[in-house]
Image (tube, rainbow, N blue to C red):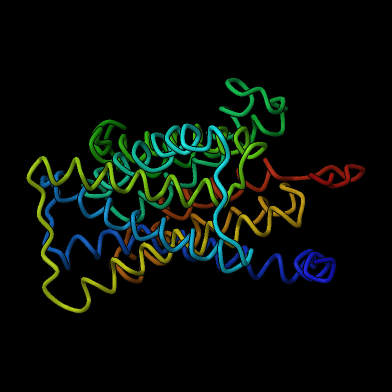
Length: 317
């Protein structure tokens, strides 16, 4: 255990594993939109979108719980009250967040979705400060949040047009609401982490939330057509993203200070935009002056939020 902690605390190892997590999370946006195309789901077919999301997260929940049992070499242990905590997390982290995220992505570009997703860092800080009171909102954090919001404004402005000309409630608005749900879920994870293992909570809420999303989609008349191998593979890959990324991130947080790990979160929107440009052929938007400026503001904002003073040392959790 001591050797494992020493190994997983090394800078290059933290950087590599964090980069893998951010690459996986960044690939989610173009992968979801690719899944829509493979499964022949159009933007107006909300029931099928929810059914698709539910199937993904049920699979992710099973993967996370299996990984947890393999890593700990013991069965998952539930404490008194674990079911209630899992239900609350499922409501925000999976049901709320991914209802808005999946529907929103169907009505906006992958590049915009990736950049708006970068807002979850700033929103998590605001929620942590004003709702859960886990930390104080410093000037440095406020500057970082302002930079991030500026990036969101820029990516939604069409040259020569007003802001609302390119802002859709069902598109960019829903993706932003998904980040609000994520921020709230982050606060609950930190709060509930004192009672249950965070990885177990994530796996349990993925599974429960997936069942609810799939059930809503099915009752509303959603249909999924797995017509070829690619459609199965993209669904499994999306489940793999959540299972592996959340597990690796949880392991890093276990053996390292939160601030040492979270600083690498700036790579998430970076990978998301680059992969959307490559996979979805949205290079004209991603590499336009507007897109580059928006991405840089989001990245710089995240780095400013995580910046440490010269005399400030990392604290052990």
